[in-house]
Amino acid sequence: MTGGWNELFAPDKVDEAWLIIQSQFPTAIWETVYVTLLSTLFAIIIGLPLGVLLVTGEKNGILPLPAWLMHTINVIINLLRSVPFLILMIMVFPLTRAIVGTVVGTEATVVPLVIAAFPFVARLTESSLREVNPNLIEMAQSMGASPLQIIAKVMIPESVPSLLSNATIAITTVLGYSAMSGILGGGGLGKIAINYGYYRYKDLIMMAAVILLIVLVQLFQTVGTKLAVHSDKRLK
Amino acid sequence: MIKIDNLSKTFHTADGSVEALKNVSLDIADGDIFGIIGMSGAGKSTLVRCINLLERPDEGHVTIDGVDLGSLKKKQLRNIRRKVTMIFQGFHLLMQRTCLKNVCFPLELAGVSRADAQKRALQLLETVGLSDKANAYPSQLSGGQQQRVAIARALATDPKVLLCDEATSALDPNTTNSILELIKEINEKTGITVIVITHQMKVVEKICRHVAILDGGEVAEQGEVAEVFSRPHSEAAKRLVYPESDMPAVPSGGGRLLRVVFNGAQAANTPIITRMAVKRGIEASIVYASTKSIGSKAYGQMILGLPDSDNIVTAAIGYLSETKGITAEEVTGIDGRME
Image 1 (cartoon, each protein chain N blue to C red):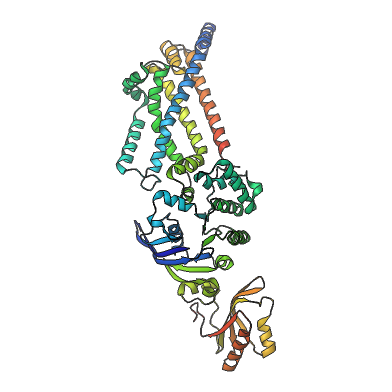
Image 2: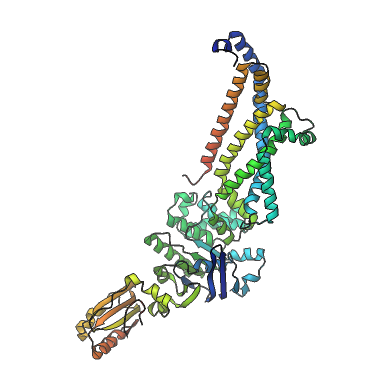
């Protein structure tokens, strides 16, 4: 902040901010939501099967994989998870360019976001699936279920409430990353907060963008929690 | 016909190895209700899991209707498992599915169409008396009701064998009885072979025709329930039939002891000991008694104390043995290892 409240809310600054908000924010909100949901979706498409593999591929799992393969998967996931997001974003620029054609803009941030989020989603999926009562898996085996049937009809359906609350965690995390991507050419509310607020000292714009990000997180979290609770048939 | 031939299984853990099964051999006839009873750790659960190969025995064979399960490929084994289904102590219902969908589960696995599966599931829920709970979730049901749903589910694929792994151990006595009656009824109606794993004598007494007593991974004794329970030979059987806490102290004084075994005698409403006193003038004291009436028949046994006289003992044995279903014999001591 560059001054007191009076200076911050000076009429000319409020008017100016209001104009920018009106002209820029609808698109920015849309970009943020769009990038967040799209990236989470892709992260789930890659991360969910990987998470399943982490559980079923174990030595005592229902579909054991070679130990070296499990070890490799674990190391890659841990590696990707330990790289700070902005560094990861720079590291995957070549890949982003190859896939999207550019490293700047809304679509381009989807690539690093997915790469940052899918290992996270895999770990969240893993922890959800480990909560499934192992007796249910034995029950399914005793009824002649194949490993794929056990995954599709027992493990995943039985952990839906937990998967939904973990998906909510994933969405809010991706939302945070997407805002961060504004500093390296990503679109959305993060870009506005940095470009107008930080670089051009328009504190009101920065505050508005941050408040909107908070509101979005609240929204996703509330909806996600509601869905998770509603889907759980154990609580009724 | 299920033939269990020389089954052995050893578990290797960090703390050393445990021999769960040692050369277990059993023949179980079609349509039988066969009890496998033993204390915890006797190897019951391992044995039942070897029958559908959830657990692979180290040695030995399980043969069902001439098919050696060990020789089957994965897919064939999965098909056999639809014919050898299982119910569990903890019911193991899918908590995120309705009761109807739970019963549909094995049918879905078998690739039955949704409409057919639902039709069959509704019939089965009716069989177990829960048609009104079709759309309820398991968490809304009592333990007994959950086990009924599990039974309906186990019957969905029209199995030939039903494995009950401590199926009533988590239930209260009344519910236990109603579940056992249901199993018996299903056995009588469909001719399904039932294998009951339990640590409870009363479960075996109530529904089993044959029983094997498992002790330390070995079959200690097997045969008809009435036979094994009325004349236990092995140590393990005696421990089960006369739990130590139930045993009387050896009476002091020089009396004689008579064991009276009730094996379906039409004596439930007859005061047989009183009558012996009135008609023959024999005064017997009841040292130990564990009898129960099923229908009008009496089962169980009693230990009578008699005066130290050969004549009286002979007369008492003579009188008691006149009633069909009662046998009497003199015994020399009671210390939990009676003989």
